[in-house]
Image (cartoon, rainbow, N blue to C red):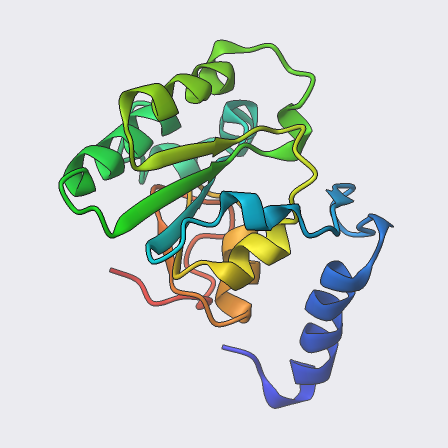
Amino acid sequence: LIKPHHHDAVVNFFQRDVEVVGVAANRGEHIRRDNAVGEFRQNAKRNFVIFNSSEDEFFAIGDAVEKYRLFKDQAQGIRYLASKTLLDPSIHYFVRVHPNLARIPYAYHTRLAALSQLFANVSIIPASSPISTYKLIDRCEKVFVFGSTVGVEAAFWGRPVVLMGGAHGEGGNITPSA
């Protein structure tokens, strides 16, 4: 895990990501700071957030993702989770579509919107939503990722993270391995 002489630098890195308004220097992703996350919180439920990634990123990363792929695609993985917990009314999933996909028309993420029609325990947060990734992490019980770097950030902030397949940097001693 974090070596003592790196601790302050790591803490500063993650705090800067949460506090920056505009563009995060290390990812080029717009950080959204607002209170809109409240409308997506289901009261009296165990709230889990699923952060998807771009399927294009998986292709670019290559073997690291393919070697540990659990599902044909992310939609299949989300359907699996939702169906396994459908009979438990205490669990609700929020699928945060990656903000970089807002203007990308590919079906692999546009069809995610239909999941909320199929499963009562799934809400979709569109890529264009101003909801803060960090507020979602803060207000959920558990995070599920398909290789997204937000999994590392959620682990840093103390949230349990379930990696739903391979990721770039796999085996970096960031989270326990199965």
